[in-house]
Length: 103
Image 1 (cartoon, helix red, strand yellow):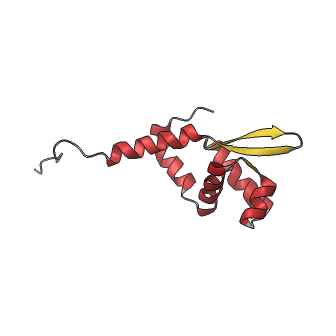
Image 2: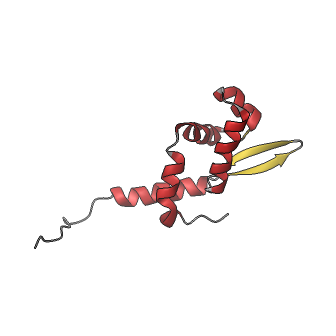
């Protein structure tokens, strides 16, 4: 799934702003995990996790890989790197102050 990070930055920030989804992403940054790992580690119900994982997949933040009978969730690091780039551009200082004159 191709994600236009510049166009979707606000939507991605909203997806990542939910505390449980943020914690899932933090854990996926360390290792690929299946739902059973996340349920145990986060002490969360499987249906709740499935909902949040679906949101992360639809946003392009994570994807799945089948390993035997299990489905592992994998972080799409390029999407996060793109979002970091967009935020970095906003934070970069400009050479001169930019102000629109008042009328």
